Length: 314
Image (tube, rainbow, N blue to C red; front, side):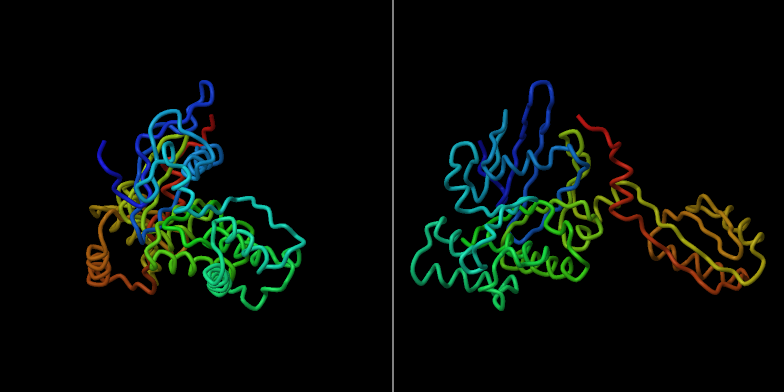
């Protein structure tokens, strides 16, 4: 067997529940300093995959590795190198933030000055240092999410798994969470992030993997996934006059499709690149059309998700 290639590696992973293949031949790697967005509808196999990586479940076949250690053969070593932030977590309401993090630091074997330093660093990183004596029960949803992230990183793991970390957060809290995730990646940690907020993943992730019915349907960088799904751009043009003539002119052009006029706005699909878009705008002006607006929008990660998935559950 070849040595693991990434900080996180799944190698032909299967998990059966009776006749159901909850995880069906899943393989991918996450390198140090990289964030992989794990996308899929409910029941797609995301949580089962993350549970296996977190040593909370065993695969039926295959293996997964964290920092070179097998979740099957070396689960104790994996746990020391991995931080897991589940989508639902307990927060012991009768302790304060310092006591909560200190408890988990002790659980990972930290002691003395090293434990206190770990708690201080985690409180500072998550922005909870001003709330260290505040009872956990009095924290807002966003602050509790930060505390849970702190719990996952208290032992300075090489890899982190975050399951729906932005769920229920307001826009400011989501922006702060995105910043912390990118800072963790910049520090060399490998992160696997599951979320239903696909616009967030597109902005924070280096790679994405789309899973449905236990199978990976698409994987790569955000740009690769978008390009691989033949995601054309939608262009809108606002003309000051001669809209019908403009529609005919556009319909006769190569690389353009689905030309539709709505008042003075003409919308159409374009399969070309940015340089070809610029050439199209130049040709419009040279052809005598008076254009007051020209805008293009690339298909989003949500568009790709809707294209490659069917919504089927097992």
